[in-house]
Amino acid sequence: MDFDDEARILVEELSRYEKESATGTKPVVKLTPMNQLVEDLGLRVHLDRGGLTGDEYRRFVRNYLEATARLYHPASLAHQVAVPHHAGALASFLGAFTNNPMAIYEMGPAATAIEYFIVNWLLEKVGWLPAPYDKDEVSPMGHGAGVLTHGGSLANLTALVAARTRLVPNVWEEGSPNDLAILAPADSHYSIARAVGILGIGAKSIFPLEVGAQGTVMPERIEATLDRLTSQGKRPLAIVANACSTSIGRFDPLREIGKICQSRGIWFHVDGAHGAAALLSPRYRKLLDGVELADSITWDAHKLLRTPGLCTAILVRDARTLDGAFHQDASYLFHDKEQPGIDLVHRTIECTKTALGLKLFAVLAALGEQGLAGYIERQFAITRSAYDLLAGLPDFECAVPPQSNILCFRVHGSDELQLAIRDRLIAQGSFHLSTANFGGKRFLRMVVSNPQTGLVHINQLVMQIRSICTMLPEELGRAS
Image 1 (cartoon, helix red, strand yellow):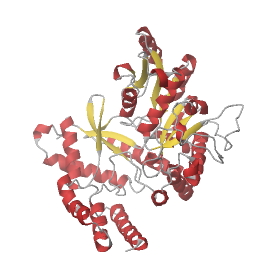
Image 2 (cartoon, helix red, strand yellow):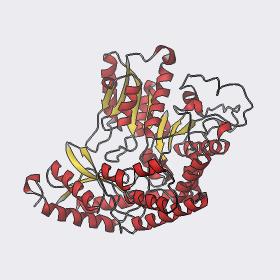
Image 3 (cartoon, rainbow, N blue to C red):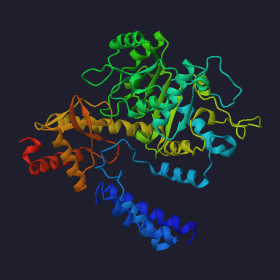
Image 4 (cartoon, rainbow, N blue to C red):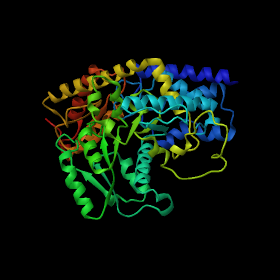
């Protein structure tokens, strides 16, 4: 078979898969044991004999799709993963087929131009001055900069690398000093602690910012935390804020935190991987009030911008901080040459970087900025309606009122009961939920990302959970 035939098979199977998922006729998730999946997919057989084409190829694709978590299913509520618009998925295929590693302009001019354009669009949404297209043009007011990376973890790491280089300019020659500290909420994404470890600063140098009953930072307590760490001989490298937090989806008060950072000369990083998308909405942009005071922000397109993973922006207010973050050389890449574009490789940990901006641009071009904003507003509104429903039920409780499309709730009973309910839902294939700890208790957690999910599905979830509770043993502490 040739490319056209196999492409046709793939499109036909994906179309069937999307319809089955969207209508809920298949389980939302099916957790087959891994050894069984290896056998069902025929991995060893195909590896040994090759020639995976024709009917065998169709069978493999169908078996693969049967074993996926169906994000297009309206009962898919577990994780912060986009239900990708087909335009973004097709753009992923276009980028993979052309395979232009575009961190160097000559290796992917079209992809680089699109990424540069997308980064400037994102900078404008934050409230920062976009970068000029002519590399020799410098604004007297300064301008922002950014780069797209494969995920928020890399973006958060890049932001802290830039912060460290600004504070300790000789760090690439001398190494990290032992007096640096990071301030971050305790429920910050684990990539913050991982980045601190990678930078050689150490987990003991992470000072938790105090949070209130709603799970957000109390800015009035920051000065005391700063005084405590400086009394221990530490220098604050950066303060990190959530916009929004991964576990419960609440936004820290960015303006208050930003003002403290400005007065103290401390790098302010906003982890907006999930919630920065609210900047597109006139209704919800206020959740990120003060974001323009930040020095850097992480923003995932593969969460609330309907873009296939991975596609994350790391944006900085001052381009010089990102352009000076990395101090390496490579003679085969960095040298004088005719350059009609801009190389991005010096802004990122990556070198072979795929056409990430192409995916986000395709979604924007299909839906328009207003279409994406409408989608975000709808998901936030459905989540609030789910909260109103669940908070009003006698056998349910919610952690906090939602500010985004993330809602944590639980049935009255033990933590073990919540986990047992989740396990039973997944075994049934009826609903896919995650869980999170908040306030010392385990909550079930929903992330309403599917544009097909409505309040009718939340009502069905309530009935399903109540049915499960009647079948679980008393020792789990279920509600009567």
